[in-house]
Each structure stands twice: as structure tokens, then as C-alpha cells.
Image (cartoon, rainbow, N blue to C red):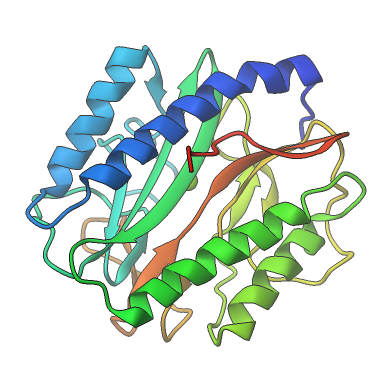
Length: 256
Ligand code: MG
């Protein structure tokens, strides 16, 4: 079911968006060679406690999950791209690290993700990350009342395909509100003019992600982490966006 938010409700979602943005800003600065993924999770957990926020992940136990997630952050490194379960791993020089974070504040959820390289970056990794960021911008630009979800999908897909990547359609964007995942689904490729009409009050997470040389995934033995079928690296960029009469509002916008 698609739920629309009043302008007052969208205002009430701003603290969640600002909080999620602040955690990702902090994490972006902390991701470095020698840092353990569990330290990043602990830092995010501390920030949740200090803010009186609630994790969307820690008790998350969907039908496809082997057990409750148990952590507050997704950390996906190198060939991992989505749902990375933090584990005892020390970040190495050149690692491509994606962090995805969702939390609720005052009962409203925000969801956002970014990718960075720790230490010495390979051009191919920077290009992969930059493509997901440009695809996210292109998708947000289509998050306009009167458009359809397919316009967002087509814009994302066009950027990814023009850069030479193939797009997986199994995991994509979604409605965001009182819970982390709602309707509509927003695929990372599709046909313009198709899908669900975008109305003022619709709040969605838009989240292009890519693998360098495949669009196939497999699930790690941990039951959560999704890795590329061919070992190539992945990147992920996500914002929570409100569609309004005055255009899209990026609720999880980070400081420049
Ligand atoms: Mg997310």
C-alpha cells in the first residue's frame, strides 16, 4: 500500500533524515585503513543511543534473513555490495567500503548509503562509486510530482548503462515512512512513463548500486551479505527523498 504524507508529516521526518545524514557524515570520516568494521557499527550504535533514535536493522528479521540482523549498520566491503553484516574485519588499503544506515527518530524512518575507498584508491573503484552517485542525482531529478516511478528507474539505468555497467533489478528503492520498507518498489532500471504515479507526499528511498563486471549476486555464509557472483567490486548510493509540490526534498542530505 502506498502512503502519502502531509506537508506537516514530511517536516516531522526531517529530524530522522538529519540524524541519518549526521551518522553517515561521521562514518565517512572514520572509514580508514586499520579500522575494524565492528568499530564502525559500535560508533553508529553510540550515536543512536545519544540521539534517542531507534535502529531499523538490529531486530530486522525478514523471511529471507537467517536470523535477526543484530547490528545497526550494513558494511559491505569490496565484492560485497548490499546488506553487509559487520564482522571482525580490519579495513585494508584500497578497500571499497559501502555503508548503509537506517534509523527512526520520533517514529519516522530515514535510510541512506554511501561508498568510499580507504587509503589508495583505484580509478576503477572511484568511477564505480561516482557512477552510483550520478545515477542517484539523475533519479532524484525525476522524483517530481506527475512523473512515474519508471521515470526515476529509467534515469538511473541510463546513467549506469552509459557508463558500461549492467543493472540488477532484484534490489532497489522503496517507500519509507513509519517503517523502513514500503511501497512502491523503485527499480534501478526501467521504462520511462511506466509504474506508479509520483504524488506530493510520497517519500521514497532511491538507491542505485552497481557491480563492476556482473549483475549477479550470491548470499554469503553469514546469511545476509550480498556479494558479486564474479568477485568484482560493488558501490551503493542512497538518499531518502520526499516528493512535494515544490520538487524533491532530499531528507538525508549531508553537509557538502
Ligand atoms: Mg538503505
